[in-house]
Structures are given as structure tokens and as C-alpha cells.
Picture 1 (cartoon, rainbow, N blue to C red):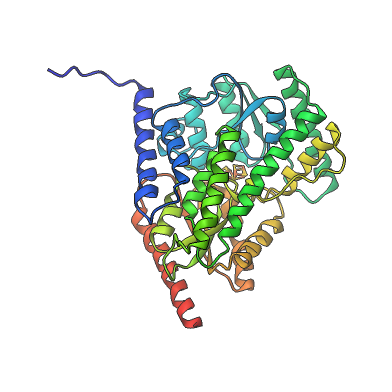
Picture 2: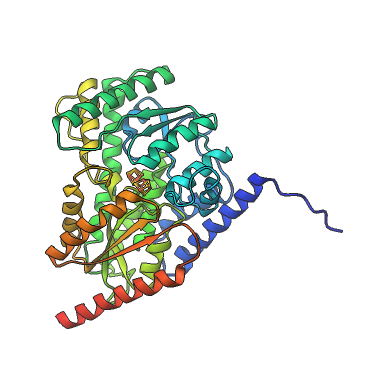
Length: 422
Ligand code: SF4
Ligand code: SF4
């Protein structure tokens, strides 16, 4: 006779999350042309963390961040590990629905659901929450009610003015002082400079990969790139760097050998909007499954983390902190800002530099700012003569058919345009 063990809620959550992970990882490994060998590191990493509940940072202080605006350089310099808590699991989104309105942003619901369960392999010792969009801002207070130590980091909603620049510099100075005190360590010229160079080096690897994606023959899927950049949320940075160096080498060889991850006439897509976070690659997978290839993106889970470097004039601690604050504010193209011409400029620039055929703009249902910015982006693309498709989606496995139909029709229209150009 079989003994039936009753599953605890955490076991059930782990099982569901493992299923979500395996589905996506198997699709990436087997659903397309052979991926680069170097991707195995990333497939195994996600499997270890999400299917086998492996903790990566047992003996380290883990500093949770709710968004990209918290400088990782400062956390690394103080010997902590930044863990970005933005979450892509439908299982966690459903848990989060008990605490937030059903129509809230799935990313925020999933982050809240994950933290409410306390079922975390690398549980953050403290969380810094920048007051960016309304939902993230309110989520911070909710997460604190679960017993986490949450510190708000004031974030301005404009970025052009001198006031906002000074405002965010003060905010980041305060964040550094607070973390420094909690860690019982001091920021020094040496440790901060070292971590700025290390992150700068990681960024340079990302830029090398981007160069390969500008080629006519694209050596890697956009979905694989999302996996690589999402790993940066939580991986050991030295391991990530080593694995990405190997990937760069392999991609260089693939370009020489003309190994194409796409089809011969696959339309080249720039992806923008609400961030794809593992395992919610619903739209990116539909795009590449419909014979499109994502050659670049403008999202905070990928390009936005690596695009801009810190420009330091003076290598003194206070100057470095200010330079970091300037970079994190300036480089952010999140629609939370009143004016956001930088985002439009970035999308157009990516389309031109990567020779893209069109843009796909995803907004999570419930994300007002991405929904609101739809109009200005669509108008700008029209002015520039760039084809764009706007879609709304969430984390649920339903509406797949309807979304596929729209994406397929868009990709097909780009193919027709390409044929007519010839
Ligand atoms: S979409 Fe904006 S507010 Fe949300 S995580 Fe990304 S940068 Fe932060
Ligand atoms: S997708 Fe929208 S609501 Fe969700 S975190 Fe980003 S800006 Fe906020």
C-alpha cells in the first residue's frame, strides 16, 4: 500500500514552480535550434535554484532590492549580495492575489506572493524598496507587514531637473549610510572602485553579446539572452562573469561559422515594455516560436541593467556615490517618469543599430504606466516609420491562443514587407 504524505503549502508551491521552470527550460533547450553549449550553465543554474531549491549565498548577507534603481556596486563593495526580488512565477502571482487586487500588476503580485510565503532559498536579510511605480511603492509596506525589514528609498518622478538629481543623490547617500551601518562595514575608495569596475566588466560582456546580435546571422535567441540577464538578479557575480565570458567566446565562433539561431527570413524584433522575468517568457517565446527573432530589448530585466556605465570624475567615495546615483537615475527609462523621451530615443536607436524590422511592446495588465505610455511610443514609432505591435498580457497560462494569433499576424506582416522591399 502506498502511503499518502500530505503536501505542505511550501511543498506545493515548490512543485508548481518547478513545473513552470521545467516547461520553459525544456522549451529553450529543445524547442528551437541547438542553443550554444555555454547556455548549459544558465539552464542548470535555474534548475538548481527553482527545481532543487539550492541556496547560492548561504554565508553572505543578502540585500533584497525591489527594482533596478538600487546600486549593486554599493552592496558588493560592502560585501553583501544583491538579490533582485522582481518575480515572474504564476504560482507566486496567485499567492499574491490574496494580498493585492486581482487586477494589480502580476510582477508586483508575484513578488509579494513569493515573500509572503517565506519560502525562499536565499532569504533577504533586508529589503530596499525604491518608490518607483505606485504598486511597487505600496508593496514595500505590505512586505514589511510580513516581518521583513523594508527600507524605502525615495525616488523622484522626473529626471531632467537639478532638483531631482540632487534628490536622488541624497537618497543614495542615505541608502549607503544605512547599509554600511547595518553591515558594520565602511565604503572605501578601494572596495567601491573595485565593485564599480567589476560591474562595468559585466556590462562590457553584455555589450559584446549585443554586438553579435546586430549581425545578419543572429547567433543566439532573445529568450536565451533574457535567461542570462535574469541570472544576474541573483547569481554569484564571479560565476556569472565566467559563464558569460564563455558564452561570448562561443558566440564569436558561431558568428564566424554562420550558425543562425533564427530562420532565413525571420523578422528582427526589438522587445519593449513590462519586463520578462523567468519563467514568464510568455510573449518572448511566442515571438520566437512564430519565427521572429528578438535582436534587442528595452526592458528593466535586461538591456536597462547593462546599457549605461557609471561615469566617475573623481575616485573619492562621495563622488563615486553621487556618480552612481546619477547613473541609476539617468539610465532609467521606466515609464514612471513624467516625461520619458529617453525611452523613445533608446527604442529607435536599438531598431536602427540592430537593423530591426519591428517593435513588440508588452504591457502587463494592471500596469498603468506602461499602458499610459503606449500612445506616445506608438506615435513616435509611426513618425519614424517603424512597425509596432502593442499587447497586454499577464502571467496566466490562458489567452495563449489569442496572443499567438496577434503575434503571428504581426510577424507575417513584417515578412511580407521584407519580401516587397526586395
Ligand atoms: S518596470 Fe520600472 S518600476 Fe517596475 S521593476 Fe522595472 S524599473 Fe522597476
Ligand atoms: S510592470 Fe508596471 S506596475 Fe509592474 S512593476 Fe513595472 S512599472 Fe510597476
